[in-house]
Image (cartoon, rainbow, N blue to C red; front, side, top):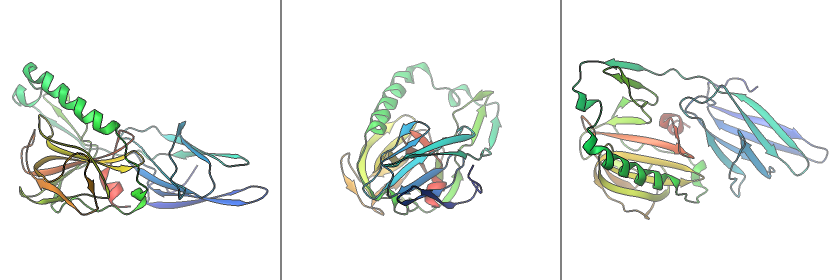
Length: 268
């Protein structure tokens, strides 16, 4: 068990063998929605809950926990002469639940005439999330994508007319239409599309090792699929396209198609 899991941390685990001592570090929060950047100079393979992770040339690797991740996880590191296994506790997060009744039905459930359009939109997004981009800069500090008021947080959920809607999977930043949106890190544009039903104008950027950022409800898009971007590049502007009631940026962070709390990444 690793203690102090609720705090930002760097954990050093000293693994002693007959011939050498290796150092393993984990940086981040072991909490639902958290993201961890690990490092080992000598591990040949790293597994997270049975899934083998990619290891960079510098010995870095990354993994994360979804909104409802289980109470514990297993991290296994294979070295030339032995294997080390660690059981780590994952702190439970508390999420805001909001109930709203008396809404018109069209605001709760889209009409059947929209089903095919929504399905096609999801296919486009899914294809982009399947793509990967090889970059080893995922260990660099990430920057906030825009300035504004935080109007929506990760994990919150609305119950509309008694129907549970999908939990809020990202971070909302409210700001006037036209406010610049910046790439939070170096990467490659995996998707840049306009006019999707829910998301409106959308950009997805791959940052390497299955880490991706998604920007939606944009007004303008300044990039195209396949473009390479640098941290701080203006990729577009805040808007209220798609299903949005006011101008804001909704940003999702994905690791291996799992939604991660953006604030926990930006605070690292």
